[in-house]
Length: 615
Image (cartoon, rainbow, N blue to C red):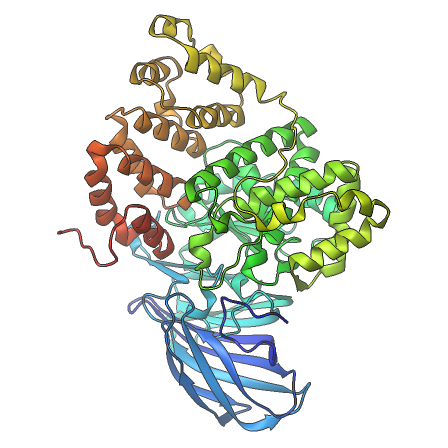
């Protein structure tokens, strides 16, 4: 098995089969006191030592089948953390299991965990904790074989203060008063389906839930739970649509948790419990995309998983493909085509941001000594989708190609795969069409940076109105501005308004007079849909409308979704006059941002690690 460049763990020699977790969540010190029992299977004879991944944690003791085992910490690596080297007090033969028990404590700066003060929550009274382990952060919460090539089941017991509720990426399995402290409650969870470490997830807060379907609840703070329940009412329809496309849903429960605003992603596909950003609660359809995407991950990503992060496109490209097939079933083929066009533009943005010769824009990049967080972009999503759509056209259309995707899922369910295995299976499945497959320029698609070698011809029906309106604004002279009317935009869906603004952002900046006129007739300032607001504010700042700068910085800091926060900061930073203001506002709010977001914005704004507000 080829090594995982992002992990120290010895997975050619042993495999974790099950984790038994005990977490004591300490809000005062912002740490988890933990104990993990790993059931490990030896893959070779005379097996007597193993390496686990860890990061910034204090290891108290290690035992093997109840006997003390010696351990040492290796050298610390910038993003991989520290290898935990364990020597067993006995040998195992191949196929034998050992239970390795590690007692430890996380660091207050553990990258997987974000601890929120009460004032950072909706309720303002209780603290809040959430985890985000993808890609390589689980090792800061649990010492483990932190590689997506390894899958295990888990059981967990989590002790929290009695006013708070804990939920995990697993099935809830009861609760009781903590026998060691009657001010605390222990919540139990079990995950009977084997899954990779990056899908272990925990949230602790003043949570409530509402039933939204026969196998679904929505969880959030009580201040937004009714609103969230109303917004996510289509969940069961979407699950059933996905099952018709991809096969049975194997995870039992499908709950959605709406996080506080600092959550760095739109959603995270934690099994049994999708995490979602509150920026989705705008009463429109951008929510449906994210939930369709996270539901799709229940098959592509969670059931069939990339073997290393270099093959991340297998997770994301197939998930976008499935998400858009759900959109096709629930809306129309034209809607799928429209979404695909928007995705191509997002890909263009990523390629422009990273540079067309940057190897991280390869569909399959090399991640030797590359931090996966820094390589993250829309490339695996949209270049991956474009390849699958191109193959769909070559192989005979959506029904034919969806047959392959479903068969691929069945073939590799419960395992982790590489691009090579995926491609071999593609050739096996379409054995009558090998001559067509051989005409695909695989090297250009997979191992060449920049845009793909083929641009699919998408159906532009729903995009035409957006393109026409965009062209009118670009071509308008000052004397033409009175020709624009509120009705221009009233006729468009929110998806189309987003597309109209995205098209304008691909052009040279509009004159300030035009943007001011656009506000006068369309009144976009009052639009609360975050996808629209985000693009509108970027457009204003780019046209050097000074009044928009505080609004852009406010949006960049009142929520922490990287998709919005990073480009908004970059836009203000690039407006010469407000360069320093962008840095000042970032430094003032850095403590509220998630650690991954803060690190990446700092990189964008060329701010040093230790620069304080005072400098």
